[in-house]
Length: 384
Image (cartoon, rainbow, N blue to C red; front, side, top):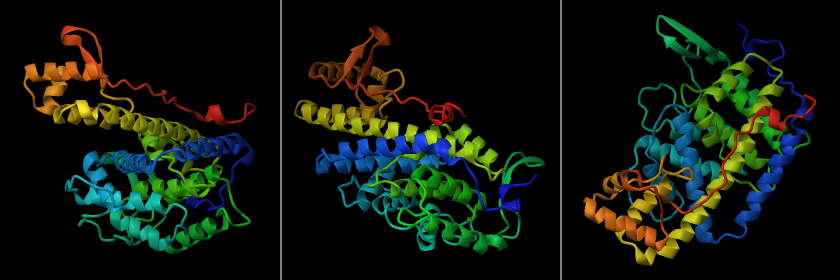
């Protein structure tokens, strides 16, 4: 098997730039919508949205790697780094580390990506790890860096990266390309192409002992923001998590070629889908703020706790709606109190009720637009 980095033309990627024109135009236009919405928000609402988007990115990029983090702990850590009030919840080393990296990613999105930044990110992502020889520096081990699955006695190799001894040269080429294609350089590339190539290139080099996926996605998020007039959050990780199997499949396929139009079209489609999801998330956070402001004087602490738990489930909410049993579990209330609390929440307009008897379910009175999957065929030229 010949991987992309083993081919004579490496690392000269080729692609059909005309195939991406439609997606590039849409990406910039959709970012403009997000920028326009943000201009009409209060400082408080902007802070709330920033915390929500950063915490989603932090927890979802970790979830792609199979690492389940406590969202509330991550969010508390993010609020601390942003200088906002917190509930002083203790975060694990992994939660604190990914929170710190993601805050810097978005707060300094328009700053250049350097080796120093990359090593700092790696230290944060590996926070608390004592099993790695190389943290905050490129890997040095002599054995092959492989991505494998299956049984130990018969593993399936999905990809093998360049040997550790070649990493300095490989990364020097990567840094030079980043500088040559930056938004203020003569060789600048549009954001989707630059971010998509950088993500694939970085994952192909796989320079770290662990954490390459999380850092590679952070790189693409940073480059997407840099390619816009005003840096904004695209939120790729949440969308890639929903398409995790396809994401790994497309990366594995792209690792075999230097002609990467298909990969870039797939990446572009997911970026546009991510923008759609981010706008929905912004609308949801604003709806949450309006609802909580309107009912706060008429609800008790138990009811507020349940409402906030419902909001924490995101725009898709509790699957099937909130039941009385759910309420009792969250608020720790007996049946009679639960019945009174739920009836009062419906009366105040904080919840709506559907069904009857044991099938009764409660929902937030918020309608958000559904997020539709976007595929490469939806953004490619019709003649392709």
